[in-house]
Amino acid sequence: MIAWLKGHLVSIEGGEAILEVGGSVGYSVLIGPNQTRELQSQVGKEVEFFIYHLVREDANKLYGFRHAVSRRLFDKLLGISGVGPKAAEMILDLFEPAQLVFAVQSEDPSAFTKVPGVGKKTAQKIIIDLKGKLDDLASLPKPAPGTFRASPRPSGILDDARSALVNLGFGEKEADKVLAKQIGSEVGLDELIRRCLIELKQN
Image (cartoon, rainbow, N blue to C red; front, side):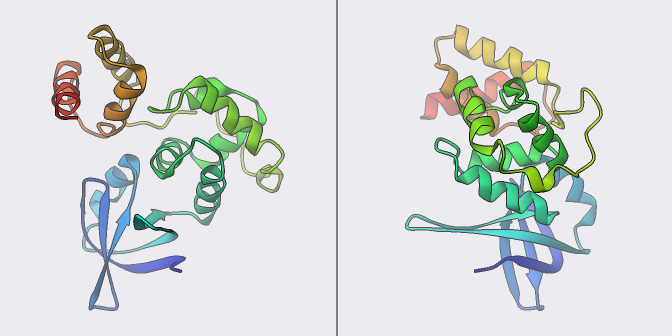
């Protein structure tokens, strides 16, 4: 199993970072939208990732994180029923480790429902399942008030797009699924809705 990679960042596109290791091997590492934005300036330079190597019958993927604690939290999130790799990756992309720990300890489900694809029931389950399992991370500095969400897109645009899609007759889960794919894109509300409608019609 691969746990850590260090090499030259060849390219970043569509949530995938290509990392050249040893001069002859290129690894595909999956990263979230915020990491994508942060690492754009590092293309061509040496970077390192703590890796969660997901191996299943239908998948063999490498999820990359800049900190070891984020990889640990990813593993814990995957152990929660109803939280898959995509949702876990999105949660850790939008929250610093300290933010996630504080949200769990504060029993604040509203922090997690800000993540596309995470509803109230799933948010409550995350808190219940992780409560008491993060005590060793309690020493992390507490986040400043109002800093839970670290999304590059204002939450108002996501909320407005979600409402528009639901009003057009699409289910909340359908809307959340397509909106999750658009986080990190720099477009306005109208264009965001248009992209979501195209994908929804293709499904």
